[in-house]
Amino acid sequence: MTTDRTNTNTNTNTSAGAGADTMRAVSQDVLGGPEVLRVVERPRPRPGASEVLVRVRAAGLNPTDWKHRAAGIFLGEPPFVLGWDVAGTVEAVGLGVTLFAPGDEVFGMLPYPHGVGAHAEYVTGPARAFVRRPASLDVVQAGALPLAALTAWQALVDTARVRAGDRVLVHAAAGGVGHLAVQIAKSRGAHVIGTASAGKHDFLRRIGVDEPVDYRAVDFAEAVRDVDVVLDTVGGDYQLRSLRTLRRGGLLVSILPVPAEGLAEEAARLGVRTALLLVEADHAGMTAVADLAERGLLRAEIAGTFPLAEAAKAHELGDGGRVAGKLVLLPTD
Image (cartoon, rainbow, N blue to C red):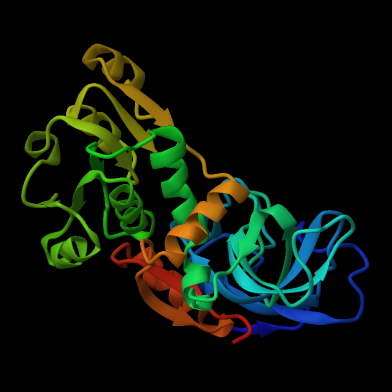
């Protein structure tokens, strides 16, 4: 990764007239592989009304980061700075903010998808996208949790209303969203089935999976039955195949909000339901995530930490699709 002191990025998190103070950020001018990422120097943003300025101490990476890097998706053409997970220190507050004051330790998810920009030394975001970081939660954990944990919470609690005794199937249960979803489901008293390669089954058992399933050795659609809720983190034909694991009236929640062809028709034929979820910034959800973490019921598996200058290396690891847990950038620590 190269370092560029020019400021060509027009990311929406930068306020006009940000002043002479600068910061470093990981930016890109073209779509492509990890090699397109570069460290640039750009004006430090200032918080607008209802916003806070956060000095970023840890910022998680998620599959949506490498997908946007390669294809633009919701963000369109670069330049842009990626990153939605934030943990850090409030440096300044904008007009009307009462929740926080400078010096407060916070974490949260910037509004997805257009509130991007966490892979930088400073970022602004809506005050209510953040919550206070519990003293017992270290900053790397806090940086790893927000997007993945909110996705799992909104899928399993807000959407599926998982409760004690439910049978929950989590796909890619060792992945970023998956391993947090397992813990959230267990905190609700669910019986959890998780798919992963055999080499990750010890990890799955350690985080609470009751029935690990090796998707390479067996067809999960034949091996698993009478499930109340499926959390699909893979998409494609996994959505259709997962319908066969559900009991009548059961629910498939997919965090890939593009339905497989024929999904609605097949669900109707089988008497099951489907829901397609796109994660949202959520103060109440972040409060619940913070509470679970403080009580020791939710912990991110940290697969690696990287300084800003090694963001491309982190993306390269993520692109491989074999990371268990979360990768985290440390912009200012």
